[in-house]
Figure 1 (tube, rainbow, N blue to C red):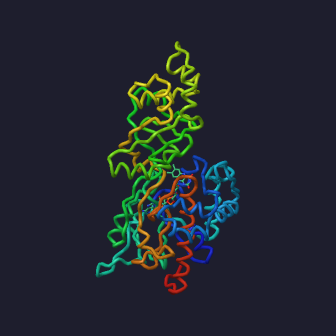
Figure 2: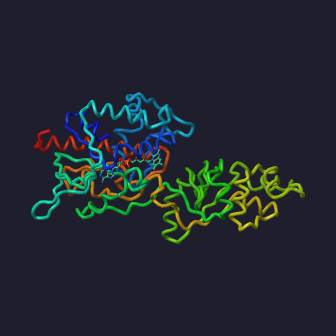
Figure 3: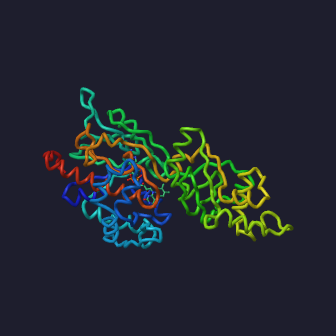
Length: 402
Ligand SMILES: Cc1cc2nc3c(=O)[nH]c(=O)nc-3n(C[C@H](O)[C@H](O)[C@H](O)COP(=O)(O)OP(=O)(O)OC[C@H]3O[C@@H](n4cnc5c(N)ncnc54)[C@H](O)[C@@H]3O)c2cc1C
């Protein structure tokens, strides 16, 4: 996105990417529909970015959901708003969008150098970092030095390193004196030590329409049982709180309300109508409609000592406790928390210590829930960084001959 803004302004732009092709994480996000942004009042949207909200506000107000949706439409991918406000391209895929985008970038003169890994900055003879000169490692193990009048780095966080972003840049930034907080898993699943039987039978089975609570906050949605734990939007929504609780106390209790639409008393009344001859599974299905995965979850959570008393059982169904000691690793998280401290950046996302170098996207220290907020902030900061670069160039004469 930064390349597009810079090329549109008439600059000669080269994108360096260490993978064999660009946009692999965008394509991965496309596998679940490509929730590109969120349709809600801008102040509500900004509030999703927590401590980053103030720092991101100008970028998101300048290039926000409406601008992003128009941009998608301009690439032949009109968007629509889903029932919860999430915005998706009509095709629910990233491939057509990326294909059209790459064609447009090519016709704007942007060249792409794949298999070029940014290694860091070159140093001057006295050992200082030279922000205009970057070093790239190539597939044949050679290194090439590139001088740019401006540089925008958008190297991502460290989740799903398989598709490209591995956080390898962090050490180099720290070496240059830039404060970077540790990249940590955000929007990630929780690890649960299921019994072998449960994991085998229910991995991949959803717990539909549940409410997941941590402390006094509850989030509804569908959670997905996996062989090693639970994933899904209502879990991801709590991942920052779970992470902080584990850091503080070594564990965090997550409770799952299997029947969020019926009160405790309502469930108890229904459970009292249980037929004596029915098995636990049958009675829970008949009286309160629990699915096999939900019934087995009760067994897992209680060590197979599910209470028979209707009142006690109702309490359990409304708050199945899962004691969590670990979240899923960053390799399988949707996004990363941590990154370059805002204090290191000016309002145009330029590194204060390295003038002429701008940063964008997940490498900056903000985090947000799923729902389109991650891509929105990545695009918005890229536009802001590119506009910042143009403004900076206007004040500093271009010296490279394209
Ligand atoms: C499974 C999954 C589903 C997701 N779904 C959604 C969704 O529906 N909606 C949403 O808003 N967000 C979603 N996200 C998150 C979203 O994809 C990211 O927040 C976003 O892509 C971050 O953009 P970025 O440009 O900062 O980093 P990236 O998209 O990771 O891009 C960084 C690029 O830099 C390259 N790179 C890294 N290091 C180097 C280096 N040293 N040298 C050269 N190149 C390098 C990488 O290969 C990569 O191509 C999803 C993430 C995952 C993992």
